[in-house]
Length: 135
Image 1 (cartoon, rainbow, N blue to C red):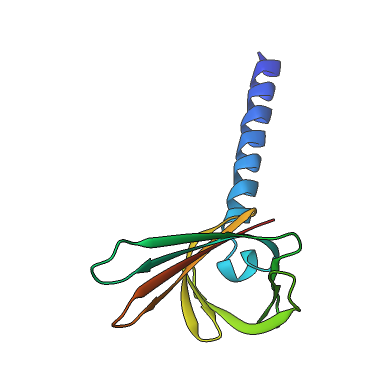
Image 2 (image 1 turned 90 degrees about the horizontal axis):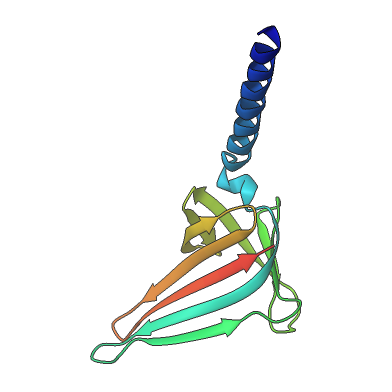
């Protein structure tokens, strides 16, 4: 009987410990979770013009394309074989990313995936760009 109780307590403590570890890593603030070099997977642009159907263009990432969010408040990125560019960024809250003062909405941020959107609108059109990054 003592062995059964000891085994049960061991199993319960392992389950609790494993559950806490997973919660702790996902509980890290977006400011910490975004810090990494991400592969550029794709950019989907949806353009809406009055009285016209929505135009959707998907641009896949090329080999070597990346976004590198660093502690210094800058994104270092290279796309399409071009030289590395640098832009300032900030995380305003868990769902708001500012890149060079342009406000983006963080749609998903996990250990393996980052998806954010940038919307630009004027009288002639609305353009929604969805960036998908991975590790």
